[in-house]
Length: 475
Image (tube, rainbow, N blue to C red; front, side, top):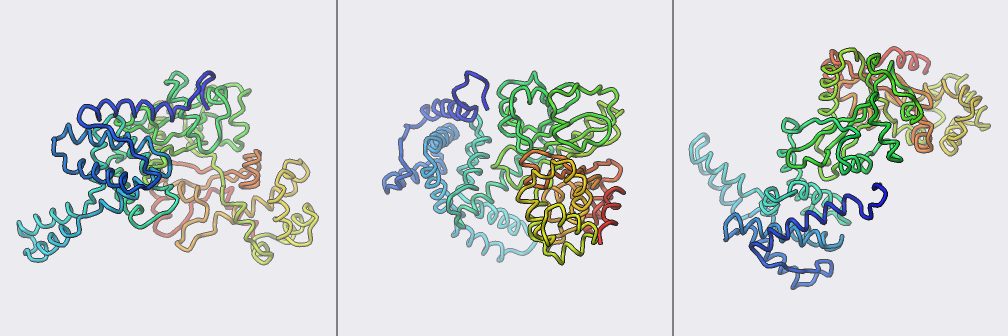
């Protein structure tokens, strides 16, 4: 979404600026090339390999290497999807580790007495030889303007290749390791985003929101009002690119409905009276950083910041979706439902769905969840469905982890399953995803370490009394 009058997205404008900046660097030390890699012509591929080798050799010194890298980057940016795939596959397949050097270093290591000077020299030699030439090339981009962001986006392209191969998967893994070292949480900055932040940053907030779509600029302004907070993590080399952000609502007690929480017509809450901070949306923004976790660090930093700035806030919790609930309900058999629900609850399911079996009843509900918005239906189905939801959070994967991905994230952080909210998300998406059910995960600073240890060691989930009561109603 762009402001009125903007003809291009911020993504397109960013690429245009990047290309112009690199053009100046490239033309200062090398001649431009125009290759159409999508066609896969032998001449174009040979020219690409020649340019990649020139980057590695860096015969003209650092300035020349930067110019070669800038020209390669411009070449990559001007390719279509097929051309970029050819570029990446060539880089992955033809510029891997130097196998002869690896073998020689391994032999030196095996021939050297362990602990000797020669042993450690051979060890370093082996590590150096195992580093793919492709990574050596990509490292050159880090010194270019916006080069770190370019590498993040390049890995995103690697993850979406139409045909994954061992070589490209290996390149993606190597690049992830490189980015992990550059994006260590210790060097990231936490910043608050407000309505006075730059228009470009606010535009990105709208585009990157992954949990609850920001529908308009008025919607965004409401989320940045006086009773709200929005915090984002930034890397020093990507100051205008949030890596992850969290949206927070300040209020009195746990929030149970995302529609009420995002109501633009609702008056702002007096923050001096706020005793609870609700984290209602957490979004990772950079696909190329997939597998590098920021959420846990972000939440803990924000809790520390709020504790310092608003000491009257005593409770910290999320209002979270339950994305796996409906898919799980669709797998249940009559026998399994009978193991969870009492006879009365099963009878209610069948009566309200006008079906003969509980499986058919759940199938009907998941097919037409809008019926839950009818008050009579909602009131009668509330208890059996909340009971099933409580049982859902006890279900484990083969590795002992909960089957719900959001639960895995928060429970691993040491949170407690605080409350299960009926019709917490009455939107079409919320009804289809979880029959409208949302949950609160409580972040109690003095319990986080204990809960985390119990969860990671024994798989024990910290449960509030309200959730335990629901489980007692289950068979």
